Amino acid sequence: MSGGEPTGQGEFLLELLERLRGNHRAMETSGFCKDQLFSTLLQELELVIMDVKLINSESHIHLTGVDNKSILENLELLKGSGKPHIIRIPCIPGITDSEDNLNAIADLLLDDKGILKVELLPYHKTAGAKYSLLNTEYNPGFDAEQIPNLNTGIFLSRNIPCSIL
Image 1: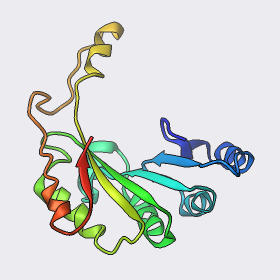
Image 2 (image 1 turned 180 degrees about the vertical axis):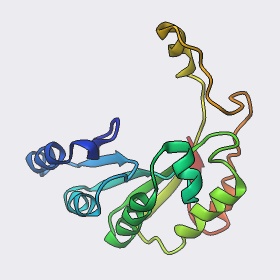
Image 3 (image 1 turned 60 degrees about the vertical axis):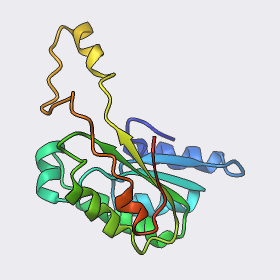
Image 4 (image 1 turned 90 degrees about the vertical axis):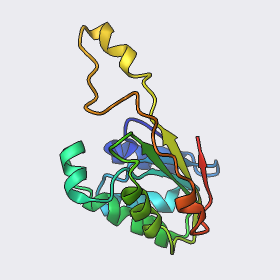
């Protein structure tokens, strides 16, 4: 399951996962949902792919419009679940790719026994081409020409498998 955000349709998602029992069921999520729903979903899934963007709460609110408290709490639930998972970090130049942010994420994952790997996702401008179709200007609010910091060494130095997608 992926999205948008699949947890936005929690009841439907749980019913679908129930009907798909016996199949390998995976979900890609931002983790932005109530912990009770997330905990229930973890019981139904064989794999979770979770995006982690920003650790700093103020920055998260400023850039996404929502607090990351539930996301970080659900990350802790995921880490404690023993469920195999992949953490994906969208590396947006000057936004999510800072050494401080990547180090903070790596520190959160140090005691994570179920993690398979971290995947760094380089920012790409593909979405920008769609704006002209809507007669609007693409203005992402950061230097889209800047090459993102894809420092896998931050994770590898902590014995956390990491690759660039």
